[in-house]
Image 1 (cartoon, helix red, strand yellow):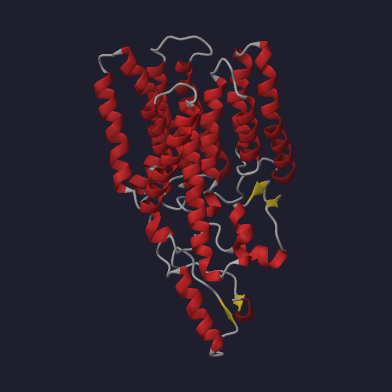
Image 2 (cartoon, rainbow, N blue to C red):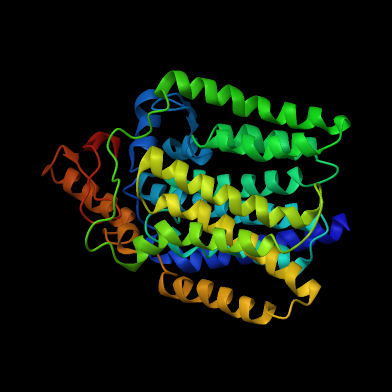
Length: 384
């Protein structure tokens, strides 16, 4: 069983990565504007640094540490491809978490696909090293919800996930909620597992409370603008709407605490909590749509599978409606948006800058990031 899962996971990881590269190929040689070049530039200015405490506790993409040892023209490819690798890994984690808990290959594979095909990731999240916190958060939340409805929670993956998400996402305290559910409904012999797993999350909560005082962004968009359009409107409201529908359907499925039929209920609930928390702390932004919409989609996949098992009369109609709900936006927003591909190629800019420097025309250069407008801080010619 383990060997079969490992082999399938390796094949799926490759498949997931191919899909991600297909979605973001136009932005491979671009430096994402959101996040920008500063994380790499800081490695030159301040030396190797992976962990930061401002504006909140967070860890940068580890491959950024190696950037100063590589030619500057390769930095966009390094960060973008590394980010795609993180996404593919997170999708694979979702697959493994579900598959090793007895769910079918088809369901587990589809759940991983829900992450990498997320339509709202196309605007500024897909391939963006500054936003890897979201696929990590989705994979960890799925794992935590799954383990919280299990009779035998696995301590190691819970603890590892707890540490990683604490270091990558300021919303990590939300993971305490599924742990609390597991703690309340598990036997006394397993409660220590949940307590140990909650420790990194609690420490991170305290650290961020001291650093940021729960304030979130000081400047945030609190309401949709007049021409927000389908992308922003659907991203803001659709996950919660589908969650409510899913919760209503899930209520028709009787079960008992510890039963896997509670998994979609917990996923839908957490999607609503994430949506509300993201709005209160950050306002309206496309990157906040990714986590709740993916978690809702995974919850619906699990729920619809349960409906099929029960041969519910209306299940074909529900499955068709949900499939259309996924298919249409995925096709419409499959490829990365202009925000991630409008700038000139990063490697071309570096080569052009070096030529200008050699001619003595400039002493420093500002490079254009992926939106085609924003620029980096000036880089001296002698550092190119």
